[in-house]
Image (cartoon, rainbow, N blue to C red; front, top):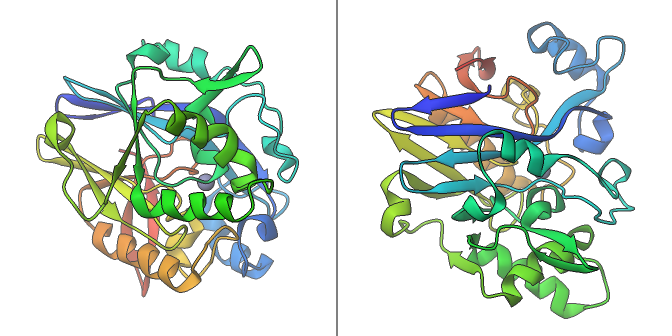
Length: 297
Ligand SMILES: [Zn+2]
């Protein structure tokens, strides 16, 4: 997708890393080569490597452009961030802001940043390194974070301030925006307020993390669901029991994933997950006792 149009609202994808091959054990706790083999035909070479069983994932943000607001959903990994525990994310130097500029937006133009959750690959561009300091990348934005999500990660940090939380992302990508007073805490079970509520609503999708949330965008009868990490890879449509290695609460994560698939299946909801490679957008369709993902808007 380059741009998904929902009436007068547009959703753009800003790529940080497209099509990164990831081993099964890095992505899922319970995947096997046999499960990949059983799904290889419908997934295709864009999602499973042709001569192996690594799965392709992408790291990207979505920018929801309404007539009044530029809303950035999830901010990827970020540049220059030490992530020794995940080599593919370590000390990146990606032209992410140039790609944002290519859709006509400078950091100052972002009005709202929404993090579906606070893992390191969803908050990275919250900040950037300027003169040795982590400063908010989007100085005019309010950063919307789930209250339960922040409480969880803040608790981990308080319990041991020297231990890197979320691979260090809490300290370098979340704390600086809190300290600048840019964070607005929300309860995803409650409606948003003001202009933002005109097209956007949140949905509690706890499980992957304690405060994970889906972002729904509606305009002119069209509906898109930005579902963060509730689905990591399209193979989970056919195999909803595949659990992400990052899932905090396996049972609740499964319930959130299955609920999303059931509510989206065979509807006109465009599903935009945080790690589905190009073309990224697609729809969930029923298939036997489970589902498949059909790419395309
Ligand atoms: Zn993620």
